[in-house]
Length: 91
Image (cartoon, rainbow, N blue to C red; front, side, top):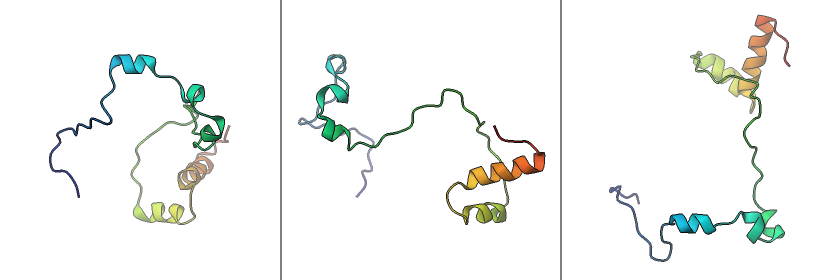
């Protein structure tokens, strides 16, 4: 069931944090046991030097279907195909 109103829900058991709460907060590594920390998914941080440029390009549905049908990595495969056409070597 979805709420129709955009009004915030207030929960006395979980009040909104104040500036003081944030100031007292500590990183998880300082307060959680290592066994629990090990269960959290490691995520990749921002790239130090991005190697690709984000663009928007319109391609035919057939081209997208062709590359997606071969599974994950379809955008990289399109990049590889365009590199071959442009005769540019990676890296």
